[in-house]
Every structure is written in structure tokens, then in C-alpha cells.
Amino acid sequence: MESLEQRVAKIEERNASVELDKAWETSWTRTGLVAAFTYVTMGVFLSFIDVMRPWLSAIVPALGFTLSTLTMPFFKKVWAGKNGHE
Image (cartoon, rainbow, N blue to C red):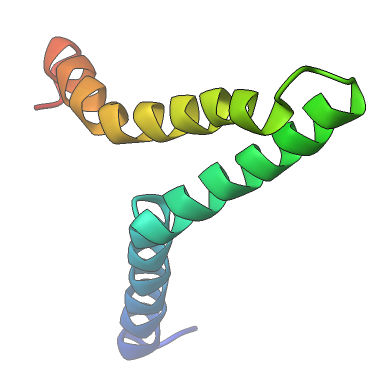
């Protein structure tokens, strides 16, 4: 059987991993990378299907993603309040 210290060490290790994942999910680095990848992907796709001014049009989904990312914490708080998780 594991010792108490080993069990606590595993829990602390898991907590550190969860905290790192949460920090990544809310980081500006992640938001910027996903917005950039969205922009490039949409620019290539819109070019491929011969849309007029594809790189200008590709800004729309990238901005949409960024705005949704920035507003989600607010809506999460509203949802949590309405569902008794304040």
C-alpha cells in the first residue's frame, strides 16, 4: 500500500498539472495562436474557393474567435450564478 506521503505527492503533482492546463487555456499566447491559425486557415480556404479579397475576409472568423474567448469568462460567471455555483 502507498504511504500517505506518496499519495499526497501524487495529488500535488496532479494539481500542478491541472493549474498549468488552466493557465494555458486562459493565456493570451493560446488565444493569439488560435486566432492566427484561424486567420491563416481561412485565408487559404477562401483563396482556394476564389473569394474576392480572401485575406480581408479571413479576419472575420479570427476576430469572432478572439471576441468569444474574451467574453467567455463573463458568461461563465453569469451561468455559474444562475446555477448556484457562485
